[in-house]
Length: 112
Image 1 (cartoon, rainbow, N blue to C red):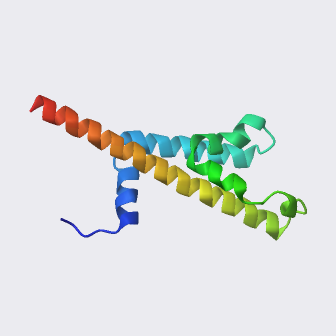
Image 2 (cartoon, rainbow, N blue to C red):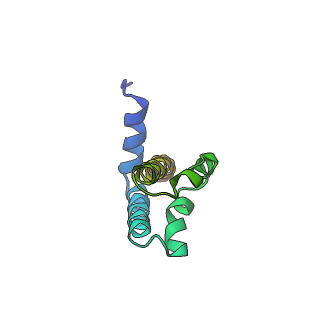
Image 3 (cartoon, rainbow, N blue to C red):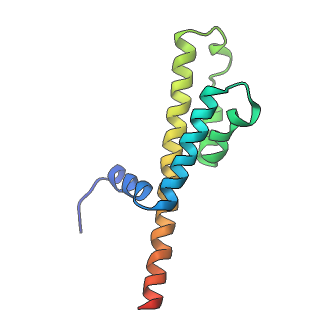
């Protein structure tokens, strides 16, 4: 058995099939649109909805009232939020990758 680290195995599951790559592309597109058009209601919420349920744990982090003044604090809050959403997207893509591998393994075993 190979001795690889957990982050490396999760990253491999998240990127080695078309289903999880398509999910990551959809997330990246929605995150880019949320940055380009932050005032649009649906585009601003789409990255969080695409990375649910794990991304909803980020709601408990109090970023709102302290970032209204703008400046460096707002940039830090936005970067932390998108970083968290990126981690959530990778975890969801790894789950999709594991499901795709399982389905492919069952289909191969059935036709063998």
